[in-house]
Length: 392
Image (cartoon, rainbow, N blue to C red; front, side, top):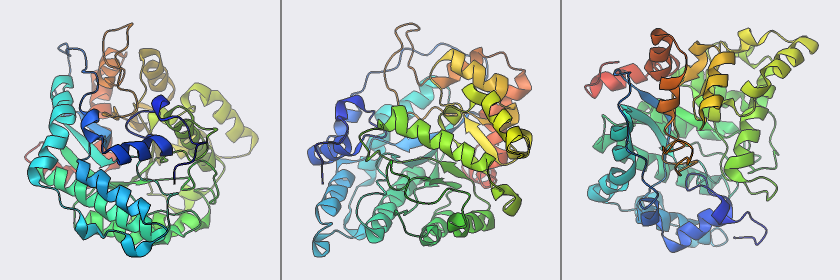
């Protein structure tokens, strides 16, 4: 299952390892290594004291038993009789608590983040591995583990689900798991992979009717989706440095050139990682929309939102200068894409709250970015926070 041509694991982040690196991690059951990542620099007091919702968090510190289950599943792809069932995974509550204590909970406290919308490891979704049954069982296991984390720490995490996508298989195949996660597990959104092939883009664009059964179910349930690719299976694309940005940027252009939101006027989609290349080329997209006789971007932005997973001050400043503040949701993606300390500042690259605090923003807009926009984009979130004793 591990090709020599896959990207080197050493160049990847622990959140979304390329296939070879993720498989090595599975083979070694090295989840403990994730808790040994460099600690963030000591937090300094910041001005904003209200609710801070991180809309983009991944479970990157899974218990070893979960990684072992996935390894068994992948090893059995050519011998389905040996594949484990979701019920075979046994993880104690203490192991679940331990898995988030050293990193996620500590960093939330240090950085002044109230809670995170929490989904399975993005690079671990691995939609290109196996078949539809493989993906469904792995999604059930992953989503159930997110539910375990949320149930044990309801004031720190809210669930967002992985979908059982498979290249060439209709997204209608995802709707039952989405409905289970929302109606039974209390999740407030989902991650949608625009390229389940892992870098080969074999499925139609997100605007194609191929995707409509999923959009219909999301509208019915009133949940948004974060457009987030998984691991790169194509050695031309480093996972987090290229494949992710490709996915973000490609999705936005698909929206520009389509009438998707005329068919689904209440569908809400979040493009992570600050929108990929989009803010930097905002004039290009405005001009292309004009040249192609498409509506202005202001109409598109009724349905499309960006997060703040941009890891330097000039990037955040640009994002907030060109993208309407009503369309920006706070996020850090911790613990994930970049874990190091910026030698120029002495602080963690992914401590994005520092950048938002330092940006030239009216206080009201800062409050929207930290919490108000997330509560609007994720309508189920308010009730979840109230139930957990948090004031939206």
